[in-house]
Image 1 (tube, one colour):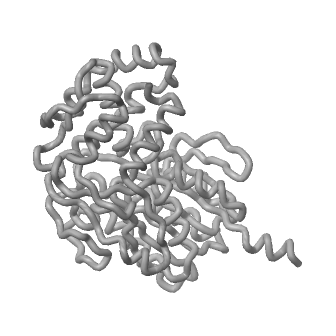
Image 2 (tube, one colour):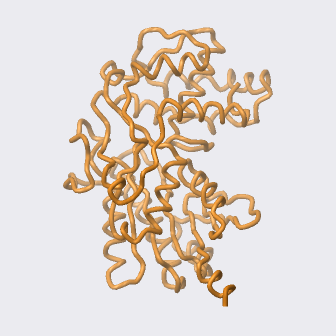
Length: 357
């Protein structure tokens, strides 16, 4: 009898986008919870061990999605954190909507015990990527003019869920920071590699963004914190069919944090100098390869540690960038992270992994 109860209590997570900053940290957190089995899906797959196994699948292909995922009858929770980058906002919509649709259409009909689908979003829902937006942003704010794939994804889930026993939730973090390689949106990696190369060249650390961005009010979301919030929202009945802003819980300005980051890397700070990292870091591959050899770093390619376009994007925000995280707190999620400590801990993690000197 007890074995039956234990079996019924077990949960199986399907983490889609398992190798990104969000997915990788979610996989790591789920692996610490004894009542979860974990399946990670990405284009490249991964190395399976213990309660964690990986599936390599191209989710843009509906036939391959069904072939690779339609046997996953044991899945109880889908955690969707996949993302495909494209040059324009309009071009982002078709692939990012298609991957979610293909995943759900492959798994939902066969997963009889499906309880929840978790959707990872962000402040694009509030138009934060377009320019100055209402702050603090709240989950009840009105939608903005499309195109916006986050909204289209949520509407798909809302429609699909009607009349079903499973529920959905949408998590809306700020910029997510944590460990992952080859990710197009990894701000901590941008700063760490930029600072490491600055140090190698013997130059001070300059803030490269717009002048106004150095003084704007921002917030971040730690990937570990987000993982805990994602599981909470997927398993607490109070969160059913709702969206939640998930933030570290504090605010900062680069003009205060930047000198502390420089001090960690034992660098002087010089006045900000607006420049495109995507342009000025283009020719640094040979230098990076030499640093890998010189300092005995892991043999990570320059492209796998470069997210310069995303750095340019974040450092261009010359307007306040934050949301109201109180809805999650009112619903029972009380975790928080100090953002300065978060950055320094991530840099330490990069050093332990021999990603940076």
